Image (cartoon, rainbow, N blue to C red; front, side, top):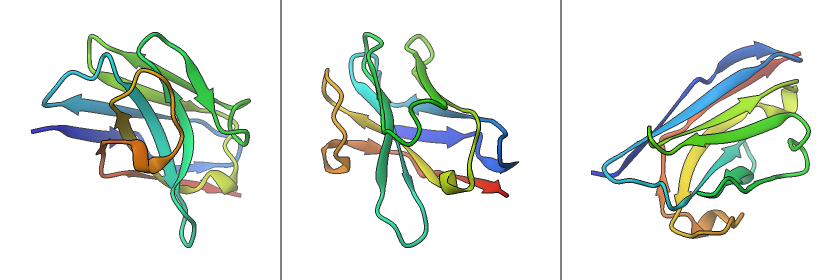
Amino acid sequence: QVQLVETGGGLVQAGGSLRLSCAASGRTFSTYVMGWFRQAPGKEREFVAAIASGGNTYFTDSVKSRFTISRDNAKNTMYLQMNSLKPEDTAVYYCAVDRATVIRTHRGLYDYWGQGTQVTVSS
């Protein structure tokens, strides 16, 4: 019954922007941490950003000056606004939920995952 669905991925030129959405269903995640991970070919899945229920956020160093994370608890939805995109940002981006109240970055701690959406940044 629990489902997370990512949308908004696509092809964009370097310097452009994309806005990813993660829509949750099956239960309410308003009290849990919601985050984004990404995985490029040949690399491990890595933490990108997360947001707690009260609005606290945390970003990995490579994106913190360019990305913004937000959530709309009434809609059970989370967003990732990606600006000034670089080819190094190319990856499959995954939405995930951690049944915790503080942000954690290890992928093994997250309980629910979406199917992923492809982001490709051309040079």
